Image (cartoon, rainbow, N blue to C red):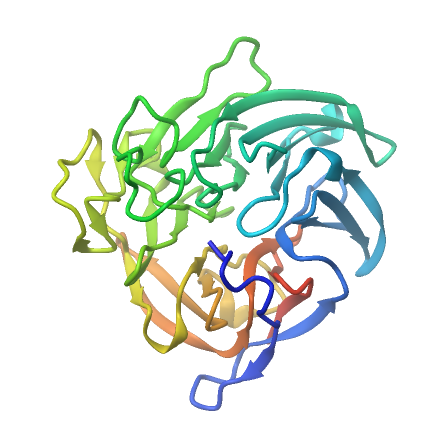
Amino acid sequence: MFAHVLAAAVALAVPNATARPQLSVQPYASGLPALTAIASTPAEPRRLYAVEQVGRIVYFVDGRLAGTFLDIRDRVVSGGEQGLLSVAFSPGYARNHRFYVNYTDKSGNTRVVEFRSRNGQAVRSSARQLLFVRQPYANHNGGELQFDRKGLLYVGMGDGGSEGDPGNRAQRLSERLGKLLRINPLRRGAKWKIVALGLRNPWRFSFDRANGDLYIGDVGQANWEEIDYLPRALISRLANYGWHVYEGRVRYANTALGPGRLVAPVYVYSHAGGNCSVTGGYVYRGTAVPAAVGRYFFGDYCSGDVWSLRIVGGRAVDVRQEPFRVGSLTTFGVDVAGELYLGTGAGRIYKLAG
């Protein structure tokens, strides 16, 4: 997703004089290694967690760096698009203390592992593997973990890497690569289910906390980046997002589509202007920035541009470029109050402000 520019990119928050002035970002933290995820849990409303690509999760309390929650650097291969890629806390975390991480192991393969915590710290010895997927290449690992309203855990899998999905993995149900998978991690004997296929590299996806709708930022090949959307009622029906038959809305290969209902992107943007790789975000449901409520925020890793849009009747409307840039934009996150954060490959965190 961001292998070719991660080392060189520098995070910037630069005003854009031609855009609307009502929103901005404020520095929240700096001096960290490259970041891949930002997360929170209602069980700990004062904490905000930051996932470091190298294999560590740190946490902030009331805006101040307070300690290390988990350190599995000895289990993780890091660099390029590999590393510790996300964390998701069980909806019942206050009682069961379970959380889940997605990382590439020392051989470069994907592992989704459950851990438990004790007294606010992860217990490394509690590791229980939920998913193992062999990766044919070092890129397009996906890596996002999210829980839905029913307590089901979702993982986004990239197509396995290289250019153009040479193994046509994203369109084949016999492969877990190029898919959106889900499981009930608390049910004994539960199996992963494919709920979507045809994904190239769903680097970041999220559920709208107000209604459960799904948003995916799927990284494109050479020309088009896309935002995909499904209302909550349709998420359980097998969806096909089109890759590698389509890149965005444009035909890419003559391969036949696999199963599932074809879902076209609600928004695409080109690689013009220095764009290269979409970073999916969240629908803002906080209170500190009223002008942002109900808007889905996303950005581009290379250009640092950030956009937002609304979904009305299943379509993207009122799409706008926001009046700031955040270079090396690798992830978004929200805290318990619904406030929005932006993390970078340069180890900086910004917070959305009015």
